[in-house]
Length: 149
Image 1: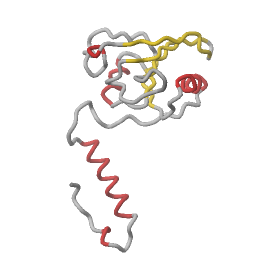
Image 2: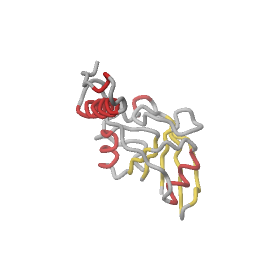
Image 3: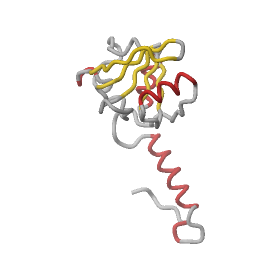
Image 4: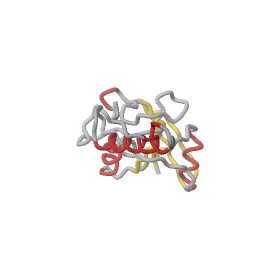
């Protein structure tokens, strides 16, 4: 199995898979790492800048592990038969071994779709934050509902 891991700094798992240009590519067999090499992409080859309809240098992997990626990239990977995995783990080798043995702690996909501005995902997040905030201050003027700034 081939597993790519985002590592813009070349030393740990980094966020923003869509903009990342440096990936560690792991070859694994029978639950062991058998190969590890750095793949450096041009800016035009980053997921954010290249077309999802064109071949990509990471199309050969079965798994892409990152500290963060949006739902759009998750769907794009899925269409290509690649499992997108988000984790807070930052140690490269430890994340691979944890993935292989099934113990890697996974996170939810980010709600953004590669652009900025209000959309339903942000509004739900703001509402949940606002709702939690209101209930943390029982009996104070914070119980009143305020519109987000």
